[in-house]
Amino acid sequence: MGGVAGQMQCDASNVTGVIDRLVMHQLVVRAESESDRRTKTLALTDKGRELIQKIIDALPEKLGCSQLGAAERQALRTVLEVLSKSARI
Image (tube, rainbow, N blue to C red; front, side):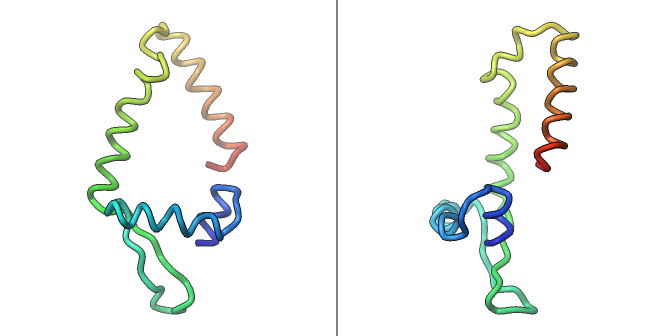
């Protein structure tokens, strides 16, 4: 949970509620770590993977990328790659 909180840049107490809802919707599973019972591990379910793929497939259209020309799409891709490296996504 601490690792997820770090990625989300929020307090670990905020993550518990989010993860609880993801588990409730069967998008992730939570289990105790084999090496440390205090540590929880998270894994995507098949349903979670399918949802992520649907979002990835729909996102360019939702963002209006279909209105960009080839050179503009490439420029956007370059900018996003630079930003993702600096944000450690």
